Length: 155
Image 1 (cartoon, one colour):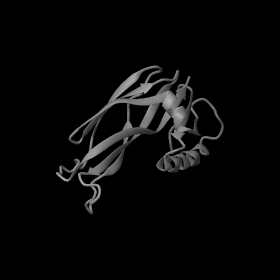
Image 2 (cartoon, one colour):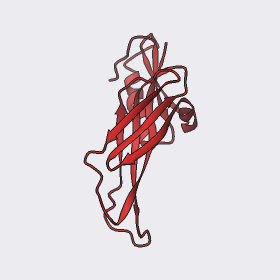
Image 3 (cartoon, rainbow, N blue to C red):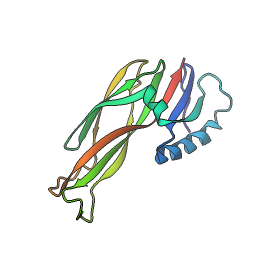
Image 4 (tube, rainbow, N blue to C red):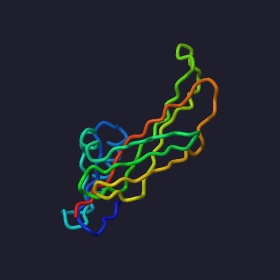
């Protein structure tokens, strides 16, 4: 169960486009029923289009070196954002796509950013893949980072 925090209403914001995010939203909406009414400090869950999420929170300046992924989260809203969950996708691109290998090392991982992001503020993040990404000569990784969910805190 998600604990409510003092200082106003909160809502979890979940993009509609990510199937895994929908599963997270179902879990959050079940938690919501434990909070009852929208009293100060209560949490609600909203499913929103990805375009709305991108207007509120964006991922910028993503860089990958070996198994380290860094970037910046930019809060475009007038609310504090917290509990930002990122999806980090390491797609494996074969050198010879016509004859790919049998064991693609590509994978996706979730990363929770613990810092609050103030209104119109930014927060840097750094993630280290564990286990580290495989070093291979038959292709390379293409890493993308997107927002899976976050909590908007209204004061």
